[in-house]
Length: 181
Image 1 (cartoon, rainbow, N blue to C red):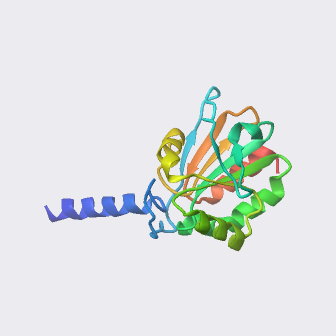
Image 2: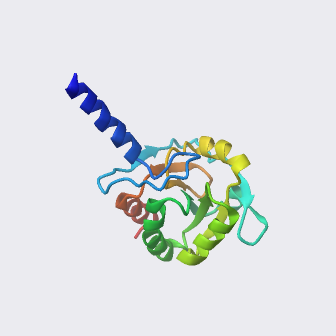
């Protein structure tokens, strides 16, 4: 009996460690270094659900307006330690591939002030939008976001290519292979 309780406790802890936070939780907990990213391959016919969200300039940005290049949607939050730890790698990928792709940061679970402050503090040069609380559940459900960060790769025609949950160096290797560097 003790062994099954211990096994259950370990499984429960592992599930809590898998992501930086759940959909509507402002969790400060972070996964361990051994956490593996969850990767899902999309089919050729899966179009990315379109959305329109407010950007840093006070207007709105529609995802479909970015067609013609690969797009990486980065679902993140300033409260998520793994999201923040991944910013330097995202900056390297952006510098290397910005002629072939756009990164669209979608901030979740932050106030507008915290979002703006985090973008400024971390000097994130790519496109940024904020998902208001009243739209968050629908957007996260549409993309199957179960933890943060979640990165969604979309091809130039607007089709889903890959979804990766967690911060994993394999994501950047995948981008290099996809974009030819």
